[in-house]
Image (cartoon, rainbow, N blue to C red; front, side, top):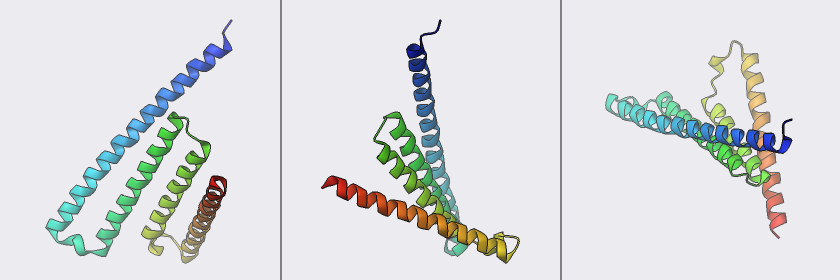
Length: 148
């Protein structure tokens, strides 16, 4: 017969190891992304395309993607350290805000089949951003009230 407490401890340890491995993967992805961004900026500067707005937007897009990766890493680390649930939720909200701002910055109506599709996407992005902003406001207000 299997001891349920022992089995639960083993699976908990397994999950903890996998979470740490995931954090390692995100750290490596972040490092690779930073090196890639620096190389792309260097090449654009040497090639003269550094002043092209589309190139600069590409750099911003990559930078924001790196921030998303960093926030996901922080979230995984918070899970492994069994931090306060509110901290983890806050990290997830920040990740969502950065991801949606990234989407808004690179938004191009030409990427959609029709104007209606582009409008639908824009409304969806706006709705998500407003919802995330509202969550941040509520969390900030709650944090201030609970600190008093």
